Length: 65
Image: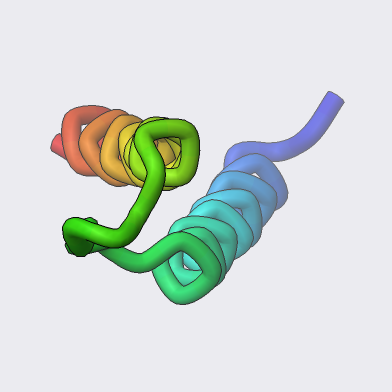
């Protein structure tokens, strides 16, 4: 069984990893502004990628408080 200090250290490490993952996701899948030349499949695919990033960020923000 982990002591409270060890548990806190583990949770802090997990939090830092989650923040790094969210930052990497934001950089990998930035907001996408479609142009008239983009086909609908590309627009929908990129919108889906970004919606996952936004869900991840919202989930992390709601769990912090």
